[in-house]
Image 1 (cartoon, rainbow, N blue to C red):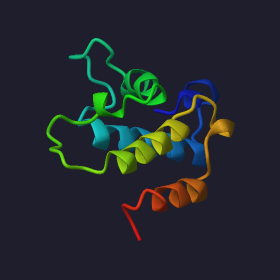
Image 2 (cartoon, helix red, strand yellow):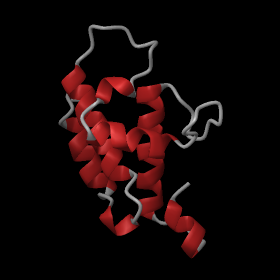
Image 3 (cartoon, rainbow, N blue to C red):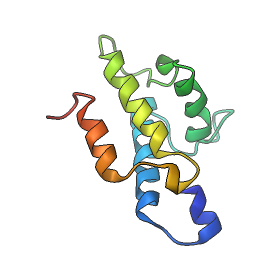
Amino acid sequence: MDPEYYKLHYLTTKSDVYSFGVLLLEILSGRKSIDMQYEEGNIVEWAMPLIKSGDISAILDPVLNAPYDLEALRRIANVACKCVRMRGKDRPSMDKVHDAWKETNFVD
């Protein structure tokens, strides 16, 4: 859930962007957004430092078998990081997310 929702008590288009970023992290990692079976139960708090440090392989779902395009996955992870920024005004618009997604070469 968008962290700003807790303060403002209403959803915005940037809340949708946040949710999309969480979805991307779930797809990449195979983890739920909140999963207390892990020491760091919040997917955003767990994945963001790893992505920012460049350790993309640390967040990838172990079910994913190589070979995969690690650079494309890195770009997707970076899109996710931008989407889950704490402040809505710091998140991209969905148009920008769409453009960045197209650049990953996962869509035409």
